[in-house]
Length: 251
Image (cartoon, rainbow, N blue to C red; front, side, top):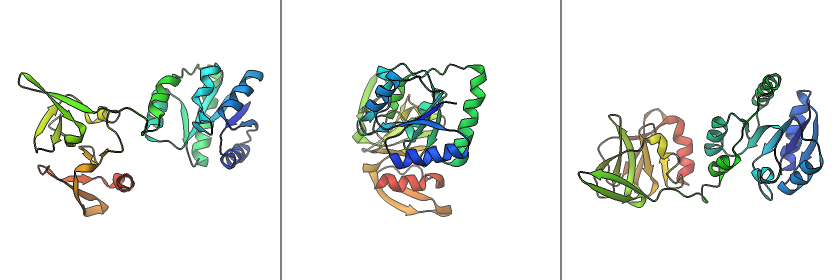
């Protein structure tokens, strides 16, 4: 098996190399930048498998494939999670979230080996993945939502929305003037539309606006209760598995 690693952090590359050696896999080459990788691919036979970091010192690794037609299977190694994992699942790409776990690495290798006999052609839409992987600060998110009220369409700027919530199979937004409106979106679809710096999904039922938080109270079973400036129709409870991420989001 011909394997290369593309990783700009040399200690991380060496660690991955050692982990692969422990699995009796020899790494032929380690590359550390977009430009170095383009030069290498232009002058060498493409490997069977690439361990590919996303964020390299001189740009996103996808820029390599804007110049070179990829002929190898890919296992991504990434510090991203939210958008990266969704993209990889949609495109049937293996990924390893840093810091790389030994068991997950072995599982990914096994999956690759199982695909080899079928000569499965992995189709990767790098443009679509790049759209999902750009830094959240650089992405364009929805600035307003519309909903039909009678014969009229009302427009709401996201700054005027305290939260989105689901109830009786419908999705609603709650405004800063303390009114609720039914919208066509689902909470799942809002994941790609809301700025994660401003909105956080605290549970299956609620997305909340950080600027609308009035108070946060300790709740049972290591959970948190969030009080918003105006919304008081239901308790907003941060699910226990989301408490850690919620606290990090607040900072």
